[in-house]
Amino acid sequence: MTDPQLPPPAPYGSVPPVPQAPASAPQAPPAYQAPPAAPAYHQAAPLEQNYQTPPGAYSAPVGGYGAPPDGFQPSAQAAPKAAVLGIVAFGLSLIAAVVSSIIIGIAGYQIGFNLPTAVDDLSTSNNDLSFLSPVRDQVLMGEISFWVGTLAGISAIVFGIMAIVKRQGRGWGIAGLIIGVIAPGIFFLVLSVALGIGTTAGAVNFYG
Image (cartoon, rainbow, N blue to C red; front, side, top):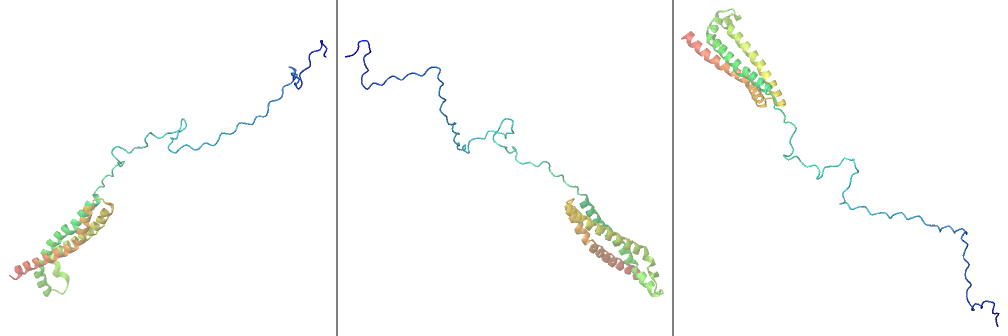
């Protein structure tokens, strides 16, 4: 039998209440937190993703560099070269082939015309050159035409080659080169024909 002034006993097996911690008790430090994990490596962007240039950097025009509307055009066309060398070569070749041939033709005819008289004087002379006195002027004219034609022909060949190489009147240079080469043949051909015609005319006049 229990005392009426005492509280009734707790039932068997009951857990006594846990006393609360005083308010002034220090709180336990928070548990250690692991640092946040580094972000996983991201896969590279696909190749078709447009690359964005940083602000202020040079950017290519949209669509790339287009070709000019009329296609490629040279900055400036090469100016045609003067044909001075070719014209000079052609002029010199005419002097060598035409002018000198005309002079030697005139001189050759006169020499041939006086040749029968010179031969007759040779038979009575003292084997000196006095028999050439009637045609000494024509002989001198022929010598001058020969040397002038030779000098002009050589110059025509030189200037013709220069004109062909430098492309300054190439057509004129080719013509001058060809005429300058054949000029000596023209010279001696005209001389032979003129001498023959003059000798025939002189013989007819002397013996005739």
